[in-house]
Image (tube, rainbow, N blue to C red; front, side):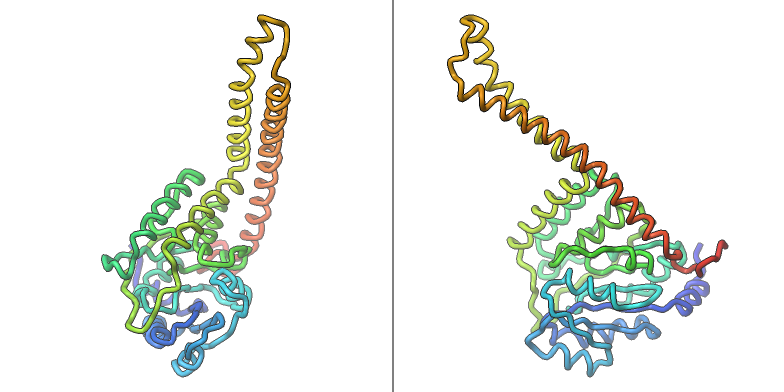
Length: 324
């Protein structure tokens, strides 16, 4: 059983940074900052504004947060800047819309430190329709199934924006996403490197009055489907391109069967264009197979490089060179 005294001591010794990416969150950012300051009084709270057109920056400064700006639009761009700029032992990331329960942060940090995990996901628990849209539930289920199929394990809430990270996760993560698909990329990075992970259930609430969601059910749904296809192509190129090659080869065989029957009876190939098409399809099928084999080797090499970058940093809660 974990000791509460030990957890508090480990948390006090660790440098904790709260990261809040924001875009037009004037109505909610003050409450968000106050919640995390109460939950983690020793943490430094950073607000990264992403070209807000309202008073988000002024309100965040008045609430006592360290405010910085990222000009490239998109949550992924903000996360990339935050992870590059901030130096800490533990990183708590949440949205600035006051929907996530700041009171859950100490338990998430304690679990990360006590069990030496690299990421703890705040699994959202809430029944309010305004808080958790049906379209996003469906997208969450699709992504969860896809990642389980790809990596053999997944999370209960892939799209949660409430997460706690170790330093070695943050400093080994090459952020490539620009928009809200950043949560999926974060999950893939952790699963791809087989990092030790955990989940903690957290209350999820509707936005406060005056705060407007930046998400679009249909737009984000399309983005999720595109992310799933991209994930499959990048992480399993042999299956992706090999499957395409098999389909092309089957199509070629179906088209070639009548030609073969005619040739067997007459010794002639009366439909030359079809024969040329069959030949082209078989060539494409072979190329797809070779492309899958080559890219599978590339993916393996890339994964090894990421793993080495990850291992260059000490585990959370342990000083460099500490073998205890």
